Length: 502
Image 1: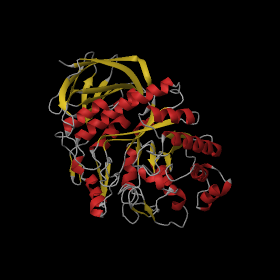
Image 2: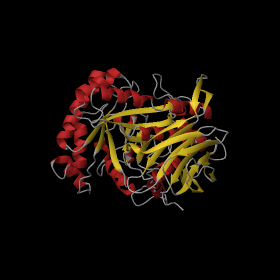
Image 3: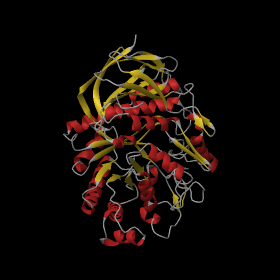
Image 4: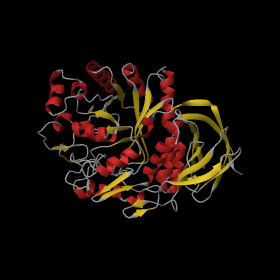
């Protein structure tokens, strides 16, 4: 029996912010150096930025890019990485030398070339409220004070106008340099926000949170009046010490847990009457944790073979399959359904490690997750419609812990377009081996086209000289009431009706 999806085109849940398709990049392993920034490579431009990476980012219309961390930022001092004198320092978060050749000016330049908003995360670990506000001075003041003048001396006469700033990273965690208690955190955020707003009242501020009532209550009571955003992070496959990837079924089980954090944080914001003022910035997320053994632990690795060289295993392209793509699509569906409270999300990271773009000396590989962003950014609508379903098939799967759980096999979000006619429906088939029929109940007309990714199996992947996962298109003729769409196994689909596609 097909799953019937009812879509009420008159009931609008909200308009999604394009920033839910945002990304993140950190000074970790090959994300910056040898990733987006590779001076001397023939594929890099005059500023050392990889042109092929920039073009790939532009194709998926990256709206916002969070930088420089992540854990890296909690011992990062921005003043060491601007101006002519760049002194290499030891990065105490990741235990490598940081050359500081890629700093604020280079980052802003990259954002301008991509066409995205910068989103700067400040040092709330070893840093101070004054250091954070000095950074805002450097970026946003026209000419007042030593830091705006320093920017001008460095060849940038016009202010950068950075709107989005995060106070700290995961300062609630024992692994974070400069971790704070609930009380310490609320006080630091309040004082930092006060100084930043005194420098530039137009800034929008976020601060680190998690699904802990005590932490969030302290934060919101002390700093809620200053904040525009509350930041949460999630990685579902906990493999930072093992790199032991969950299999396809376990990843599908993870999709049932995607919305838990949002539900909890939404409830707290609503209880405090802040849901209209403060939105959720899901500013780090990915299916799988990054692999960095013997660093975020009490006992540290001593030799580089123990803690540094294993990080290369993040970049085995065969690991990034349709499991990652399906999970990514389900996460983006969740963000669209919660468009009233989620205003930003940042896939972590965009380049190398677990990123959707992989770089090597002679080019790039677009992993399966990249093509999910391509589908959602370029083919899905921006107005989220109310929809409900009948007979969503359920399958019992084993989690990564070996427990059995029921998993809904189809995930659907329906959208319209603010600026043109037509409808677009995101439909994810998690079933790894079977086709699923989706029956549409929507008042629509026009040509139906399906844009999809599926691959030749659940373990399909892209690599150098190997392209198994790409966006494909199928035309189904004119829409008719009760039309059935056949969803391929393990596929992500955007069904467009009356959008002018031919």
